[in-house]
Image (tube, rainbow, N blue to C red; front, side, top):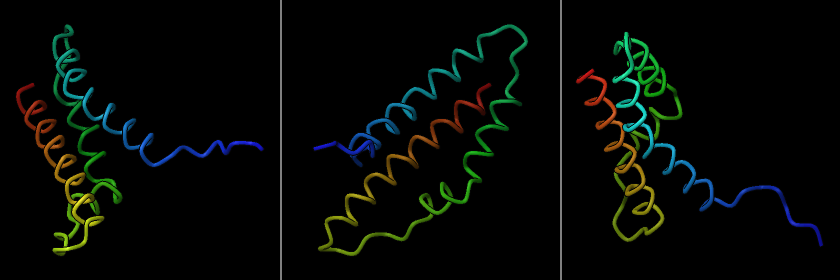
Length: 94
């Protein structure tokens, strides 16, 4: 029996979490480089936050009570929003 090469949702979510968690530190590392200005990072973050998929996740409606999957998704969206706020603050400080 051959196993599928399609990643499981949990593995992909873990990967996304790791990537988003690393971004603030990488921005901090970049800001310490000689001649590194905030412009390039700000441009990248604006492109990211203006992506239609990211926009739709950030502006998703609140979950209905009693629906655990919506509550789980809302929790994930809150984490994404918080991460994006931290990224915006980090870029602003550059």
